[in-house]
Amino acid sequence: MMDEFCRLITTSKTGMDRLLKDNGLPSWETMFDRLNKDQNFYEKYARARDAQAEFLAAEINEVANERLSGIKTRETKDGTFIEEYDNVDRAKLIVDAMKWTASKLKPKKYGNNTGIDLNLDQETIQIVKTVIQKRAENEG
Image (cartoon, rainbow, N blue to C red; front, side, top):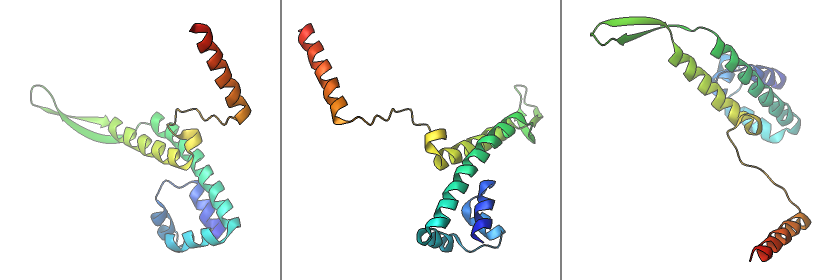
């Protein structure tokens, strides 16, 4: 059951509750409890979620490149209504939802973080401080 759960996650576009219910698996609360108690299962689950992020990222390209058939009605300047058969708004919504999900599953790769993470040791910090101090002395 645990392996099946992880396998299903890798290609899922649905929420966890629906995934479990649609496949006759225990509730999310039960699975969450097992994840907390079984390190091996937790590691498989983490790998499955990583794979799901990759799957969703690939799906974004598919959705963005396919023509979604949908009818959108709009009013023209003269008051008549016309129907358009390509639903760009729907495609944008789908892509945005997948991007959001991928960014939450794998924030370092798909997130919007533009910050720089510097892990500097004390020696490096002291060198930088010294350089800054000497420049200030030379300019002043």
